[in-house]
Length: 148
Image (cartoon, rainbow, N blue to C red; front, side, top):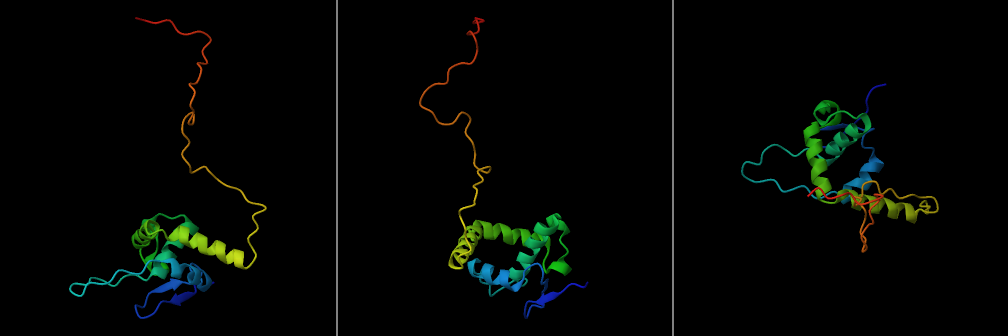
């Protein structure tokens, strides 16, 4: 089976269509921050389209390869570019906004059932002993003798 590519416009960048299907892109694109304006003088190389960068991120998520091993000719951008864009989007708060948008879409379609759900707190820092107003009693049977 050959790879199906999606053309991304005038820049001629091609992206594998299975990495960022149209329905996914329609949900992600509105929450992405606008691209920075190019300088008039010494503008540098053209910015990789956001869809190609997202394809690079999806490729790493699906395959588990290192960022440096992302095949630019297949994905549409280098792994380093995809990693930088992921970093920028994370700093811009894209993922919480996307999560909220997806939840709202599910609620509108009456597909969000919170009767069966769970909360994972494994990413929350646990303080040793917790916060308490009383001192913890020693668990030793008798206090140790002083060595002084």
